[in-house]
Length: 225
Image (cartoon, rainbow, N blue to C red; front, side, top):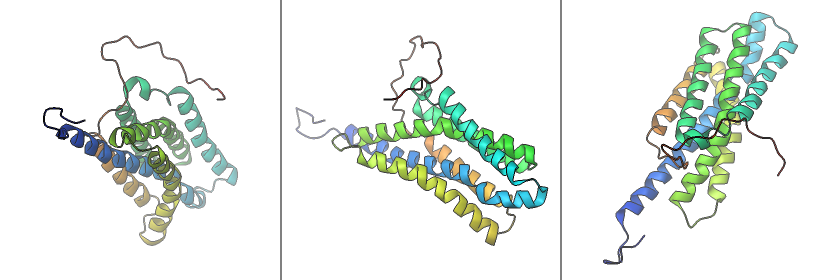
């Protein structure tokens, strides 16, 4: 905005734009490393299988457990950021993902893998829609005259790029750094924790009416546009 009396731009606009632009990249980073963690166990399953001697069918069960967590979370919690805020929802999702990483470390048995994958899936279901909306809103505030291309590209890159980065990171650490069933999780946890800490200073973008009664909770409706 321009100050009518002086003809100069108000510094608050620049500050707000810069803050939202910085938050845009923080959200993109946090989204990417969280998606990466969701794929970290994939190349490690062969090591779990060799250690615990479970069948190939059990690996399918573990993959299915993750998918079940994602679908259930999308249906039950994917829309809750409209009610409680983008930042808070992302922080909750990342915290749940970090908790699943702790579970991988402290309960490495087959049953623990299944439970940890369900929890990780719940986190990703909460995160995906929230982070995508958050990126779009931060971009719109930081660059109100620009189109949506940047936010769409970053959201897609963080989502798909993170899924590709996770197995690569886990495979390299397992192959060359040792402690194959521990170190990939520790590194991923540290990356997510850094994102969560940075996220605490990101501005909120969802319109939340303070003090207004909230509508009754309903699961996400499934529809075809």
